[in-house]
Length: 204
Ligand SMILES: Nc1nc2c(ncn2[C@@H]2O[C@H](COP(=O)(O)OP(=O)(O)O)[C@@H](O)[C@H]2O)c(=O)[nH]1
Ligand SMILES: Nc1ncnc2c1ncn2[C@@H]1O[C@H](COP(=O)(O)OP(=O)(O)O)[C@@H](O)[C@H]1O
Image (cartoon, rainbow, N blue to C red):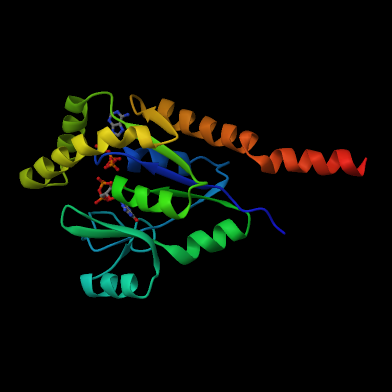
């Protein structure tokens, strides 16, 4: 039987830099894992492409997908739904390839319940004031939305102890290289590597 791939979850408060770090990781030529494109009911931002950044759905379509059990997890975040299509995750893992999810904290908890064997990484801001200024600099949300996201962020930061690893996003390059090191280390730690050697020793 083919060994399953590794489910990698990157989570953390809004504005910490999850999207930035994820894009940087996936821009590297030797990236060995697949990206799980999420579904959302939020409107596309300038430059975002349907099927690349997100699958953009109406609320009705999204609720239909929930009812049909097509989402591994979903959450309502500042007035919009976000969710992970389950089929692609399962197909990728079953094919023995790793898959990378970049999702908010409530969704990450749901994934933890379904895939306790996953690798859960929390991206943390250097400070709350730095987080606030990153959300402001991005300039994509209204004042009300920013306030909502900061309130939520405080609660989310309290949940970091539930993760396998906490990575501080002080500098994008450093955060990316820490995440990649964690993934490599996780592969070395898991039985699948030991299993291969066991077979070699037995057949020798
Ligand atoms: N639960 C869940 N959260 C998601 C998913 N996709 C994206 N998110 C999170 O939803 C939040 C809002 O995303 P978005 O509107 O793109 O804003 P931004 O990530 O803050 O730029 C972020 O914390 C994302 O990581 C998903 O499939 N499920
Ligand atoms: N290490 C960093 N240092 C400074 N600014 C950053 C860093 N990482 C991300 N940012 C900036 O912070 C803002 C929020 O990043 P984004 O990736 O949209 O966050 P998230 O996906 O977690 O909501 C963006 O303007 C981004 O350019």
